[in-house]
Image (cartoon, rainbow, N blue to C red; front, side):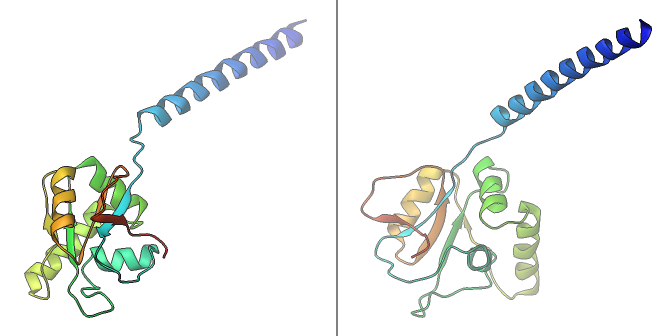
Length: 154
């Protein structure tokens, strides 16, 4: 009788633990920022690069500085502390924000390059991309604007 009681008790506790873990997992999924990060460029830019992580990483870490036609790439980013910036770096560049910052700082201190232009908001990012023909940046939503297009696998 005691063996049967222990088995039932263990099954009861196991089911409660499973429900609790499922609840925690669902809560974490709902609390984590779900950004659909889109990389954008000025629509007048007809240059071809794929959105492969290595290409984007090279552009945003300022290792690739020119489009294939020789025009200088204007890179715009949000502040390091911005949630969208963190999501972009992790999702699209497959690295951590502090690694990207360290790369920019190293270039600045050694005199081998300049970090990208930091904008204060997504609205400002959109304006800068519209105004600069050979620019690239990222946003968290799709926009219907003739002057901006997605930088995707072309």
